[in-house]
Amino acid sequence: MDAEGLHLNIDYVGSSGVILSTEQKAAFQSSLVILKNNYKFKRVLFWGKILGVKDDYFIVEGIGKDELRDRQILYSVDCVKWGILPQVTEEMRQKCSFVKGRFTGDPSYEYEHTESKRNDDRDSDPDQDEETTVLVKEEDRLATVIASINYDVSIVPRSAFLRAANGDIYGNRSFEGLSIPDAGKLCSYFHFREPILLNQKTLLQKASLDKSIDFLDPIDADIPKGGSWSVQYEKGCGLVTIRSLHWLGFIFYHVPETRKFGCVYVGTGEKNLDLPFML
Image 1 (tube, rainbow, N blue to C red):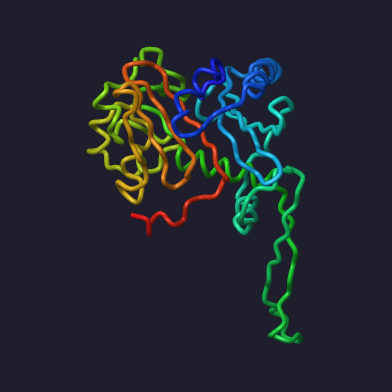
Image 2: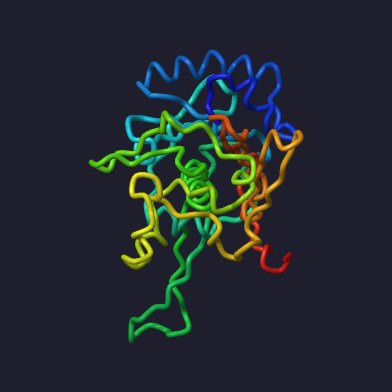
């Protein structure tokens, strides 16, 4: 969700219970302008909020030259002071996968996890395992969860972005929005991440695609097929909202036949692993 005009854009997802207080809106209007200038961002997006036990994390994304690859995630607990989250590594993902439950709201908090490793020494007792304690910072866990949410459910309308000949991705200035019928179809939306399914298609299947537009994966192929997303028309077909059933609290909005679209996540940062049993 574009931070410019945030006090107006947030109303598009108000029907889902996503709201900001007057104090929070005022803090965002001043702090995000300073944030954009200090870090030389092209634009700033309001990503959402992760609910913690003690405090909530407000998340924004800073966009550079490349809309897809040049991004930085920042967080705050007071909407004024912002900190940059670390880049997610495979080791960080592995450590954070053992942490369950709600966030505390303290970025310096450390989770403790005990790992057991079988002792292969011949002279030692084979029944005795070596135990090591692994410390996981909540800041690292926060970065990992946000990366997972972006990978799974960050979506954009078809043709909203273009890929240049050199591979850079930028906004399509000629994009005027999806038509009302197309706005309600899952095939009209793409995952905003590096493509996976696209690389598995044959040359014959790729022949009918527009290389400058169809360079991402469509969301209608998500598993479980037909049960990953909920699409709704609101305000007399004047607004389309798409909710993720994997990450409850994620909502995407688009005003058909206009350039207005965006998404926001407000939740506990816990994935809905019970979805296969709910269908």
